[in-house]
Amino acid sequence: MTQLNTGGTEAGPAALAVPEPRTAAPEEGVAVVPSAAAGHAAPDIAAARAAMVARLEEAGELDAGPVREALLALPREVLMPQAYVRRSAPDEPPRWELLDWARPKHRDELLRLLYSGDSVLIQHDGEPILGRAAGFRSWGSITAMSSTMGMTAGLLQRLDLHRGQRVLDVGTGAAVTAAVACFVCGDDGVVTLDINGHVGDAARARLTAAGYSPAVVTGDGLAGWPSFGPYDRIFVSFAVPRIPPALVAQLAPGGRALMTLGTTSPSWPGLAVITRTSAGAVEAELVAVELGHRGGAGFDRLFLSAAFRKRIATGEGEWTQRSRLRPPADTDRGMWLALDHLHPGLVRDFGADDLTIGAPGCGSWMRARNVGTRRWEVTTCGPRDIWAELHDVAARWRAAGSPDTYRLQIDSSGAQRVTSHLGALSWPLPDPSRTPGDAQ
Image (cartoon, rainbow, N blue to C red; front, side, top):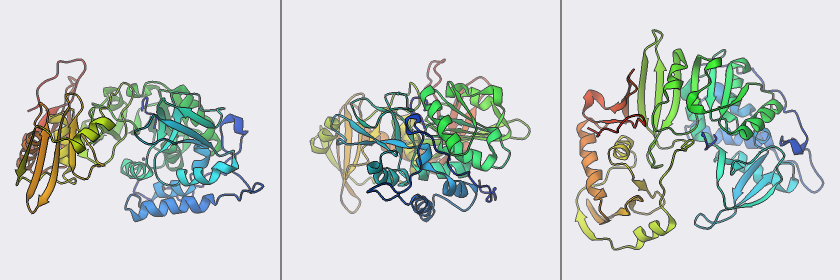
């Protein structure tokens, strides 16, 4: 996944084998699969790969099928021969180290990182990826990454890939999705698109080294790549505030598209599932999920600064009350998704011991602490009464049947709206070409 524009259940080609990774000179930015070097034993790549897949299966994030076979065959060290690790604390000025597979002393740490299942950071400040030197970078930000494997595996299975399908992978990143799509569907039908040309250059070289040859193109992901369409499957690996009409237009009859739909808050994402029927009608739903992709180009995200988090944790607030109202459970994802849209601008501090939510735009915050059976100590501060907003939406959500999945209406006029069953809970998605309407 590239942050700047920026993973089938039916039996697939289990016998399809990925060719042995070809090697290239280290300066080209493609991994050389190592043999034992002087003083450094060669890492056991196959064992690390199998262990990652086993953990995904144990966690219920991966089932038997073509995606599992693809991950067992995928040489992540070839697709990501270099990766960044942060060497500073979260609230300190960022300092990153670029690990390089070509350096034997880096291989053990890089292998653990690549097959941990965690996200992998691959680009800093939009830099060229091929030919860069290992070492430290200060300040700046990570501009491309490979998403967590649990989320990616689940999404790729939900995409339901089959041999011979045409697939558009929007947001190339480290090219993991493109490689899996090639394994399952075949190279000829796969297009991977990224806004960053450096990301595309690296993906092309590394996919080739891994034995794959999809079309790797550079452009605006929201516009898709119509010249190779229509597509049976479209996968977007960055969050969008509304469904891009161009991608819907490029979806073939019987096709399916998946993308994270989010707001400026990173706390409560939704998964948009768009299908086109064999008759050509577009149907869509929005599913409340725990994890989603990060925002794409121009997608500003709110965050709670270290100073704001400390103020919430230690502040006495403007008032404190005891309440018998129990806050919604973390698993009430449909409620939190609705809260995010009906009362935007809120961010949850998931690292706090108590339920902690802030509104960075105005400085409001709330903290709810359990102090006994059905008793909560609630502290609030600022112009917004976040506790009241939360319970307002919770009541409306329960009255609507406590949905975790909503209908996503995409009108021919361009309007998009999220609606619960029978319309009891509803809100519009933002349209930059229109004056925003009020949620209902």
